[in-house]
Length: 93
Ligand code: SF4
Ligand code: SF4
Image (cartoon, rainbow, N blue to C red; front, side, top):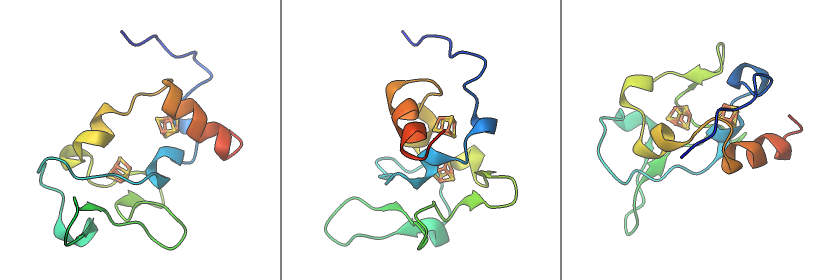
């Protein structure tokens, strides 16, 4: 069971660090094709830009621009869990 994260730990105090991770598309949630990197012999992934961020990240708001159809992995990534904390730490948050 996930724990409630401390109030200081918020996505608004982090520049979408987790949106720099590789995201495998293991189910079809309706991600628009322009955001998908096709890997011929492997599972496709979210396209990442040269600076590492996911192509679907809105750079003005630093929020997901395809939230309603975001990949399963993004839906399951939880604020305050170990992976969130380690990504924040990598970027000094
Ligand atoms: S790393 Fe954690 S705090 Fe930062 S955007 Fe992702 S879920 Fe939110
Ligand atoms: S699809 Fe959305 S939530 Fe997932 S990595 Fe890209 S911008 Fe972040």
